[in-house]
Structures are given as structure tokens and as C-alpha cells.
Image 1 (cartoon, rainbow, N blue to C red):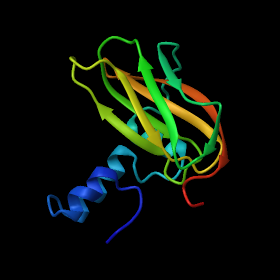
Image 2: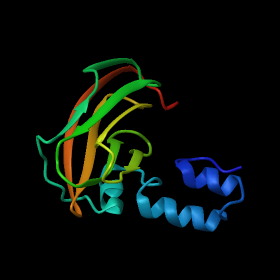
Image 3: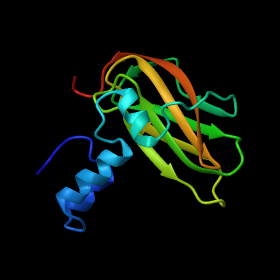
Length: 146
């Protein structure tokens, strides 16, 4: 069994729905295996994404336990078809990507792990262009086993 930041591609490979070579290719293409923020943003095509007030990260200023940090993403940009969340100082920064249909409001709530105090980076893709927002979350006890 392989480990790492494979996400759903690893699940698909473990169940035999795709092979490990394809899982590796897909995972790398979407940034899940990136080990730093810049590489993850580049893999997603969002390295030069400008900031916007139309995208917000709702998260605590201070999280007692980095193993469970509650986050909400809210976006008021029109035509959003993708949301993503990254933690800059995690061993693998890309936490999640959400593909949206036009019928879905671009708002997500999730819990994630954070290795240490870090910037959270939210991305929204609207009309083929990425936008970003950032928020610092102080973590008292890390949650990634680092």
C-alpha cells in the first residue's frame, strides 16, 4: 500500500479502478504531490492568481488542534467552477479541490489538518481565471504528524 498525498486518486488505485501509474500522473498534474506552496499553485495553473475580496476564508485565528481545523470558503465571483484550499506550510499544501456545476453555490465547509501555523490559501476559478484569498491560522498543536 502506498502512502502520501494521493487523495481520491490513491483511493481509485487501491480499489483497482485505475492503476498506480495513472494515479501518480493525475495526482501530480493537480498538485496533490507538491511539497511546497509554489509548486502546488503552479501545478494548478494559479501561480499568478491575484487576490480578491470576493473570495473569503472563514477560519479561526487560533486553532488548538491542527488535526481538526474547521474552514469555510465563500465566493461571490460569477461563474465559479472550481474552489481549492491549500495550507502553505503543510508537507503537501494542497488540501482539497472542489469542481462545481453552475447550479452549485461556491461555498464549502470542511475540516482539514494543519502541520503548524500557516497561511491558508483559497483559490476560485471563474471564467477560466484563478483568484485567491489568504488567511493566517495559528496552530497550537500540529496535526500532520510532523
